[in-house]
Length: 422
Image (cartoon, rainbow, N blue to C red; front, top):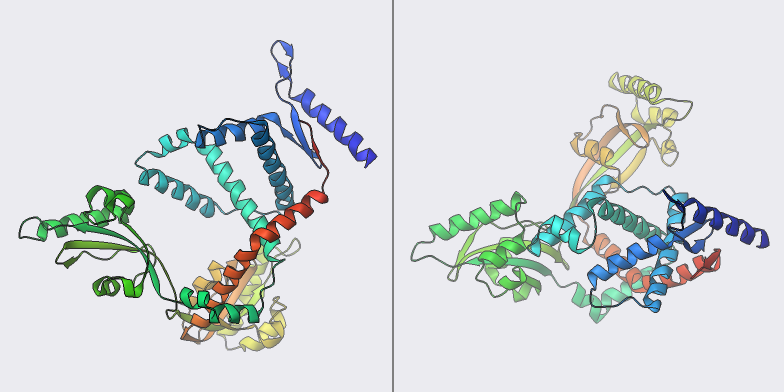
């Protein structure tokens, strides 16, 4: 520890000196406020975070206590980001873009432009993207480490499902947004035309449903963007249930008529004990992996050769046992048993869904290597029990996650070298 402290002091000194140059000579521009392992947190990072928080709460003055809390949060984040780097966690661009689109939707719902939103939050678009990326990394680190500490047993799931809270959770509920357009005179054609224009604007993502509801709806929740919140199936008009029953989340109904006028509904979420019908596939595959010594081109050539043998009548099971490099199913002829949606990577799922029963796919690539896939059978099943039990596991984990997160962070701090310099 003595040597570590000496090293840290030298490192901190070098950091301070390196950041203190301007055109008039040496001048202190930044300083270290904390040391976390072999890294430092600079005062500029602390001030940036404080400035950002102040933009959200302009009436709250920055105190020594708030400064210490923000610095402590930066230290905790730095500890978690070190774990992320060691695990080489990468965030797909699609996930980052989805979050940015969510920010844009919130800005639109508030009736301001994206640029205005950024200005209010004291952010640039690059800073927003960096912040979202870091937030997603932290979420993955926390989820991975905290979930591994929480064990939910079948008994706990059964107890929850039989409890009054579990029975209430199983009730079918819908979260809806609603727009009501009253009739103009005795003719409803103008209202229907306006309703279709609104639907087109939402589908083309030119305006959000919430902003259009606030602008045009005469329904009781128009000022809330048409949000009807969660309603049990029994609490909704029968015609509403009929219109939304076959919708997926975020889909809109067609315009429909009641005595009050023309309605549009957006199904935002649904929950409860509804059938969960999914198509499952029984498949087997042959996997040829790439490596430093076996290039992608060579792997594809081998997969093409095996595929030709299969087309010429060779037995899939025997070739899988001979050539497949998926050791988890190699000895059973590449048998993957019955799968459920989302079990495999996208490239595999896409090929599986497009390959006719009894047929063999052409070689295709995923991040694992080159695959040849055979679909033995498919069927549609009600996966309600499996899906709902998994959701209960998530609920019970969530209840315990904050306590486990706190304990995990305490352990991180205890096992790290941290020195606060303010």
